[in-house]
Image (cartoon, rainbow, N blue to C red):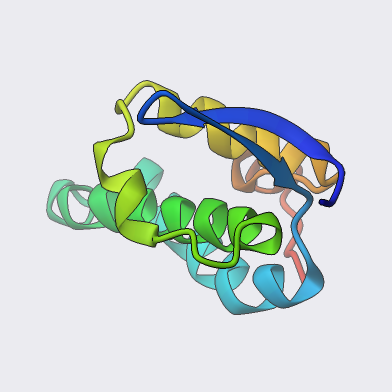
Length: 113
């Protein structure tokens, strides 16, 4: 089992390891675009981007969890409490020593995985 941070999904304990470059490459560009739309798009763009942003964050969490639990189903995260999603995602990004989209946006830099 890879080193990671402890997260709970439906009351079950999991050890979530760091993001890999493949996970970042597959998901990060879309995540940054959605984050920008969710925070500074038109009301219509925001309404569309927020759920997509949540989906992308859950995709990345699931991909990280599958590193230790190959059979982990992405659908298991559908019942994650809404308040836990940003905490879990930010913990994963921080543990991986990577910047969050908000930090990148604040710095005005583009992320190139």
